[in-house]
Structures are given as C-alpha cells and as structure tokens.
Image (cartoon, rainbow, N blue to C red):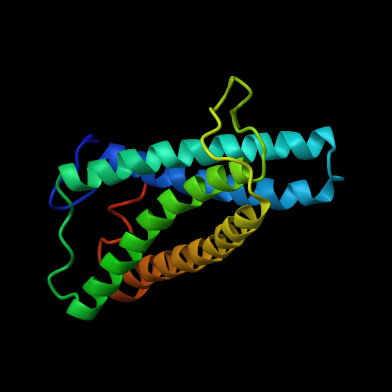
Length: 182
C-alpha cells in the first residue's frame, strides 16, 4: 500500500489520518457524555475531562497534518459521471469537516481557559494560560462548542450517507478507495 495518494485512490497516510480522527471524535463524544454521570468535582469527572481535552489536542494536531497533506499531495479524481452539484456538495462537506476539526478543539481550549481551568495534555504538562478568566465569554464559547458538536454529527452523517450511496447505489469506488487495507 502506497503512503501517498494517487489519482485513483487514497494513500495509507490519508487513510490513517481519516480513520484516526474519526475514532478520536467518537471517543470524544463518549468521554464528554459519560462524564455527566459523575458528580461535579469528582475525580472520575476530572479524569474524563482530562482525557477529553487531551484527545481534543490530538485531533487538532492530526487535523492540521491532514489539511496540510490534503493541499500538498494529489487527490483521487471524482468519478467522471458525477454531477457538478454532487462534486460541489462533497467539497463543501469536506471543507466544513476540516473547519470543525479545527474549531472544536480550539474552542474547547479557549473555553477551558476562559473558565479559569488549566488545560493539561494527559497529565504530562499543563499548557500555558493564554487567556484571562471570563465566565461570560466562556459561556458563549461553550455554547459554540456544543453547537459545533451537533454540526459535526450532521456533517459526518452526510459524509457516511454519501459514501454508502456511492457504494450501494452508484457502485463506484468512492468508499473503497478510503477503506483501510484496500
């Protein structure tokens, strides 16, 4: 399997980044909703938030790598019979996914700092405080962070449905070229 993308299929690096970011987003949703089962201030709740923030930072780093890789290398061509409207929709959804992959972890970091919380990476070190505590603005950023999570769910849903449409109805290679080990 080639590391780089070709005109026909995605390379192993693109696939690795794609699927790792997807898995991390699933873990993120689990962590943030699971921590609600613990009382405020409990060590378990703090541990879930530490992991949520740490994996969020991982998503940010991987997203930056993926976006860089996207613009540096080749991209497989869209099927020749694909309507322009579908190409536009695919490019728009991908652009919005990239945007949310950046916005979500950055807004989480900003929200934590505005709330007066220290942000740590897996407990290994604490990020420097860059923003003064401001609960009012922190609440606005929190709201944007939550709404962006809904946008992510909608975009990923559209992305998955489009892939399944291409695989089962159009019977083209759109889905297969992104599957691992193909």
